[in-house]
Structures are given as C-alpha cells and as structure tokens.
Amino acid sequence: VQLQASGGGLVQPGESLRLSCSASGFSLGYYAVAWFRQAPGMERKGVACISSTGTRTYANGFVEGRFTVSRDYANRTVDLQMYRLTPEDTAVYYCATDRSSRICPPAWSTSLFPYWGQGTQVTVSS
Image (cartoon, rainbow, N blue to C red; front, side, top):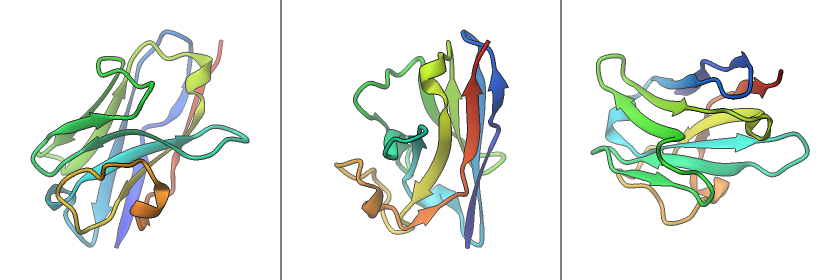
C-alpha cells in the first residue's frame, strides 16, 4: 500500500504546475484524498481535498481557480493543478488519504490521514 506524489519541479513566478497522486495496492477512487504542503521550517498544512464523488474542499487561503483539485479517472490519479505560482508556494507537496472515508474530513489535521505519499518538491523562483 503506497501513495506517490509526482509532478513537482522548479518553475518561475506566474507559471503553472500540475501535481499527481497515484496509489499502489488500493484504488484512490474509493476514498477522499487530500493535498498538503510543507514549506521549509513550517508545519504541514492542508491545501485541498476531494471526495470519492468529486466534491472539492479547499483550506483557508487556497482559492479554487488558483488551486484546483480533481480526479483523473482514466489514469486513476488525484491531481492538483496550480496556477500563477509565487515564491510563497514553494514547499514539499504531499497527498494523503485515510483509506476509509469517502468524504473529506471537517478539519485539516494531519492526524486524520494515516497514509501519505513521499512528497514532491515545488520550487518557485526566478
């Protein structure tokens, strides 16, 4: 059972990036999946979550449109599309799930998600 986040990299301010979360050993499609990020020296914080049926939830400070979480049913991934990136978006981005809930939890506590991907680094710099 494993989650894997991919798609990170170095981009310039204003550019876009799409991250993907995939799973081995189980299907992401049955469960809510969340994205978190952790900037250097900071706590890991929630970004977005998507339920098994596609309902999206965004953490405070993350506006849908600049960050969009979605399911790619063909590739069996949960993606995070990020637009107009700024240096403040620089962080390691993680995907997570609890493998039991179909809906997103009411809080952005990391303790609610037992299963985590290894993270993918996003660096926004000119």
